[in-house]
Length: 72
Image 1 (tube, one colour):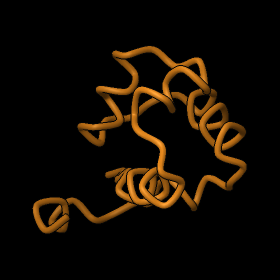
Image 2: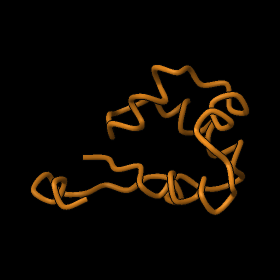
Image 3: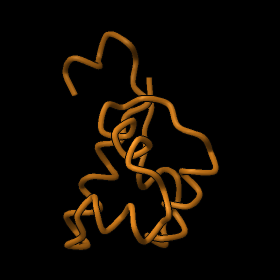
């Protein structure tokens, strides 16, 4: 399962909110909602976010085992 907690921490570090990320990267509100639910999004979306935040994929996402998802 994919986990986007690193993305939310990065936004806090950059003092950027989700709405600002959405506008700067050009992603839709529904895509942002998917990210908030740790749902799968396209690689194109992740690339847009990485370009916007000037980071790598590992800086915004991680993979966790299914049994760890309830632990965060």
